[in-house]
Image (tube, rainbow, N blue to C red):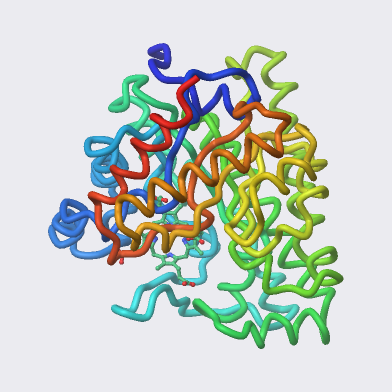
Amino acid sequence: MTALKNDRFLRALRREPVDRTPVWLMRQAGRYLPEYRATRKEAGSFLGMAKNPDVACEVTLQPLRRFDLDAAILFSDILTIPDAMGLGLYFVEGEGPKFERTVRSAADAAKLGVPDMETELRYVMDAVRVIRRELDGKVPLIGFSGSPWTLACYMVEGGGGKDFARIKAMALNDPETLHQLLSVNTDAVIAYLAAQRAAGAQALQVFDTWGGVLSPAMYREFSLPYLQRIARELDRGALRQAQGELDEHVPLILFGKGTAAYLEDLAASGADGVGVDWLVELGEAARRTQGKVALQGNLDPATLYGSPDAIRREVRRALDSYRDGNGGSRDGHVFNLGHGMSPDMNPDHVAVLVDEVHAYSAR
Ligand code: 1CP
């Protein structure tokens, strides 16, 4: 494989010195880009794009043609796993993802198994391989998965939820079934991330988007232990590396929304990086994690609705906050938003953000 031309992102995840703070944005490929909307129209649907490796590659590369981003993220979705488990993923225009079948009972959970990565999820691995080839070492490629808990939310609710009533009722009334579901999800997530790594992903991120809807006691029972298991078991990559199967360690980032209360636990999980949302000061996050991990984040995505001057001001504030909490050093920081971008955001503002991160953080 071609050597990487820009390894800032991977160096930052190792907390090594870099010339500028690296930046990428969650949902950097998506509906805010006119070229994305054009490709989507041609492909017919979101799933039509995600399941066609050449189209997934095209959409992955679109934001990199416009902005000076330091990483690419695979264009796919977290719901590919439950779809491959047989739940029947589909999208209703304006309503988001839905499942034909849900998991509500012990019998439903017992039917689930880990999908085969090179058959049922082959289209994802093929996309990783095509993107790596087309990137040609420009920047590293991030593979990803949903967390076991976040996937379970969609599988039990049958789609995106607001109050998570069904899965919380399951946690209260039938925790054994929920644990069985989370356990098979964890096995699937580990196999999925390992397969993306084998196909060429150079970093891996787990999205625990709904971890923050849980009470602390429930987070510690239903989300955290499974994230910890992922970090532990994926790290067996170190063994595979020693055996010559992998060229180098592939870093893992755990992103959680509304989970800043558990930063210390996430930093001790064995992951290389922790993604933080905008409800915590980066400096505070850095102080609390004490250099154990790299931190990724954390501008409020709504910052992109601000004027260019306001965006630059908020970028500098976040960069300075991190440095102040990190003993005066900017190393170990991957700049990002605290959550994904929205379809109504202005692409010109993204350029302002990305360029300001690089300009202001230049060492
Ligand atoms: O064009 C469209 O209408 C589809 C919108 C869309 C897109 C662009 C969906 C459906 N998925 C995606 C891509 C996607 N999803 C990526 C691509 C890479 C990137 O550029 O970042 C990633 C990483 C995801 C991950 C994802 N999907 C998450 C976790 C991250 C997050 O934003 O919290 C979640 C929760 C999903 C579920 C999902 N898929 C799609 C939508 C609209 C949703 C959210 C539904 C909800 O609000 O519950």
